[in-house]
Length: 335
Image (cartoon, rainbow, N blue to C red):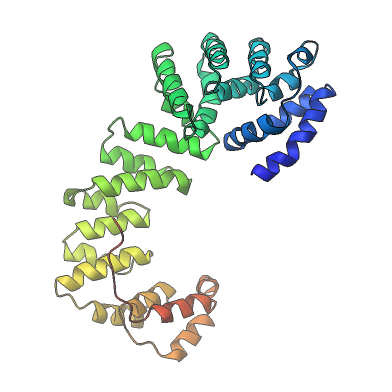
């Protein structure tokens, strides 16, 4: 990312000095918040020499880029110019300066942000502050802005960040929501609608840490293998666990195998019978997991079978992985 920024900055400086503000705007709006934050270090080292006097009479392209200048006077002048710029890009650049190491720049940036505060602008500002939160004064800036939004706009900041295109921002929103204390059922329901694994992992980790034995049925109904596996470890019902021996997730199958084996259930025999009745690759893998010996001819028949889905999934790579797992101990998943 840093190399990419280093290549683009010189071109953006040329465009800004040539007065092509629209090209600069398109480029900067196309950057992710993390990339924009990365540019502050490189821009302040290499492209901040334009004097304060150059701001007057120049287009906004120069002002936006001066927000990442090494010269605090330039950054302060940039804030002054951006107070009249109502664009989303100005919201993002001002957000960068809320954690500036020069106090005077920070004060001006905060005044500008407070004067233009509204839900739409907050949705552009929060992703940049989330990307800054691991930097010096970044966490303070995020916390201060979050309190400002909650107080002035009477809305939880995570709600404004929830629909962001930036995944780290959505993950932050998920963490903020979890801190409000939703019920486990609400978290699982929210998880079922989440399409991004990066965000879903936050919910999964929370549920895994909070779930009790009484929640096993809730977890077993999930489409996520990790939650079904946790539900299997929490369950003691043999009839429920037996059904999980054929689950599509190896993590779930192994949890059920271990729980049933501890109860004296014949896991090997069940899988032998299941394999003889089913040609599905899942049944074969489950049988191999518990130590059922499979004739090589059966593996070849399966790899060359009529089921296109089975052929795609096997491709020898999957079959060889099953063989290497043969005889390996069954372990519970990490909590």
